Length: 200
Image (cartoon, rainbow, N blue to C red; front, side, top):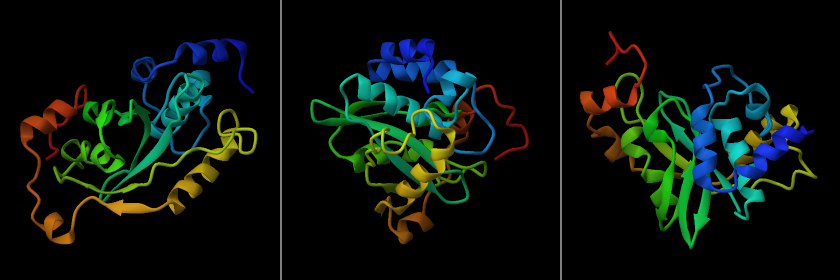
């Protein structure tokens, strides 16, 4: 159940920009597990999954119809973003330690275009571009039926539903085999505040 102060803050997060600012203000949750939308406001930290749920809970109240998109990688962690549409175009809100995997302006014509905008910034610690698949936008169920907003035990159910949704390849196998490793300058720019000595 939401606390009154949490609901008051949630209602103030009535635009994608405000949601992204809120997510950027929170420390990154390093622990495993799929928690609720409420968890970031309760614990004052978030990772990409519960950050996306928080974004969805806020944007629903702001008149949007948000959807989660699962970005799947090889030899790397997957990433969850909360997509939204504005005047027919797609944008996204996201929580990440990496600056390039966060907000996207609503300028993309399709979910595929939106997913591909993350490609150059999505890499592993070996400098390999690792994004390979993305899911069809997944509209979360009504919280009255499956309480992903405040019940921490429902996160795994949401993950299961998204996992079963259609996923589409980002590139062909022959393209993956010939990808260039990322530039060292890009690597450093995305590792803000992280000690990268001895990596890549």
